[in-house]
Length: 72
Image (cartoon, rainbow, N blue to C red; front, side):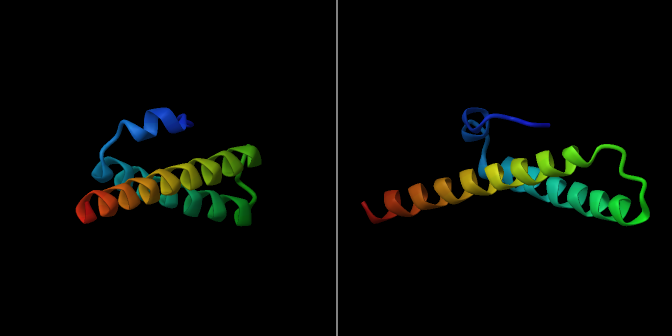
């Protein structure tokens, strides 16, 4: 699911929010698997965290740009 920031900028806010929710759910599942010892690949958890951070960054950038356009 790792996507580049360029690909994320092309998505709408609704899609980005949906993807953020999916990544949060995935991280929750990863946390449960980690606690129970069923997590096969711990590096996937790191990848999911970074993907979530990337999505949240793009959401913030889009919101700031929308506020700037409203003021203009």
